[in-house]
Length: 491
Image 1 (cartoon, one colour):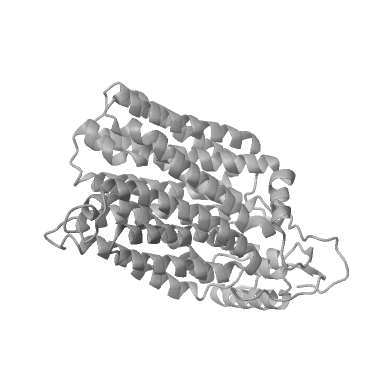
Image 2 (spheres, one colour; image 1 turned 120 degrees about the vertical axis):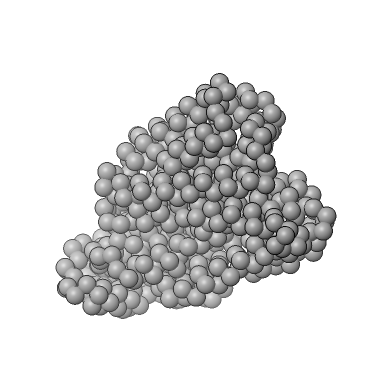
C-alpha cells in the first residue's frame, strides 16, 4: 500500500464542499456514475448466476467435483463472509488512504478472484476464490458509496445514490437470463457454460476499470489530509469544464468551513463518534440494514424452491420469473429516487420500509389462504420489492451521509457487514427450512418474520431518520477535524 502523504497539522478555511455542491449536473457527473456505480451490476450478476447455475456445476461432466449443497451453502456463505470481511478491511483503508486508491484496489481484487473462479479445478479452489470475490465486492461498497456521496452535488445525492445501489438488480436480471443460456447444453458443453458466466464478469469489470481510472480522488478527503492545493486544482478544473459545457458562469459558493488537517483518525475515535456521539443514527443504520436483509432473504433465498415446491414450476424456467422480479426491484429506486430529494428522507425511508412490510404481510395471508398462483405470487413479490428496493438502497445512502467524513467509509463498512451477516448467515439458517419444507404455514412464517422486521425498521426511521435532503454532508455531520475559523489559507 502506498505511503500516506506527510502533512503538518494546520488549519485551513475551505469552500471546497460548497463549490462541489453548487455544481449543476454535467458530463463529469455522468463519468462518476458510470465509473463507480456500475460495479453494483457485477455484484448482482455474481450473486444471481452462482445460485442459478448451482445445478449445472454439481452435475457430472462439469469439470468440478462439487455438490449442489456445497455451491448454494458453503460457497454462498464464504462469499458473504468475504464481503463482510472485505467491507471492514477496505473500509478502514479507504478512510486512511483515500477513495481512489481503494476503489481501484477493490475492483482489482474482484477481477483477479473472478477470473480464477472461472478456472476452478477442485472444490477448495472454488471456495477460496468465491471468498476473495466477496472480499473485493465488500470493499467496493465502502469505497464507492463514500466517493459517490462526496462527489455528487447535494441536490442530486439521494436519487443518484439510490439508483446506483439499485442497479444491483440490473445485474440480477442479466444473471438470471444468462443462467438460462449457460444451462443449455445444446449451446455450451456442461464444463464450459458455467465458466463463461464468470468470464463475462471479468470482461465487464475490465471495461469499468478503464472508465474508473479517470475518476478523481474525493476533494473532501484531500482537504483534511493535507492536500489542499490538489483539492483546489481539481475543483477548479471541474468548474471550468462545467462552465464550458453549460455556457454559463457558476454562482459564487456560499459557505466555508475551517478544518485542522490530520493524517488519520484512530479506530477508537471512529467507534466513539459513531456510537457515542450519534447513538440514534447508529440505531437507525442498524435497523435499516437488518430489516432489509431479512425481508430480502425471506423472499429471494427461497424464491426458486417456493415456485417449484408449491406451484410446480420447472426449475429450468425459474430464472425467467426471477428476471421479472429483479427488474421491478430496479424500477423502485429509479422511479422513487427523486422523491427522496424532494419529499424528503424521513417520509420516504419510513414509508418505503413500512409499506413494503405491510404488503408482504398481505402476500403471506393470500399465500396461506391458497389464493395465489405462480404468476400472481410473482406479481405480489414484484409490488413488495418495488418499494422495498428503494428502501434498501436508502439504507446505504443513510449511513454514508449521516456520519462525519473521516468515519464515512468505515461506517458504511460496519453497517453493511452487520446487515449482510444477518441476512446472508442468519437469514438462510432461518428461512431455508421454512421455505423448502413444503408446508404452507412454514413459508408464511418466513414471510411474516421479514415483514415484521421491515416494518419495525420503518418505525425507527419515523423517529430517527435525518432530514438530509438538499444539505451538504458537512451540515449533516461536521467533520471531526472541523476547527474554529482562524486566519488561514482559503481554498
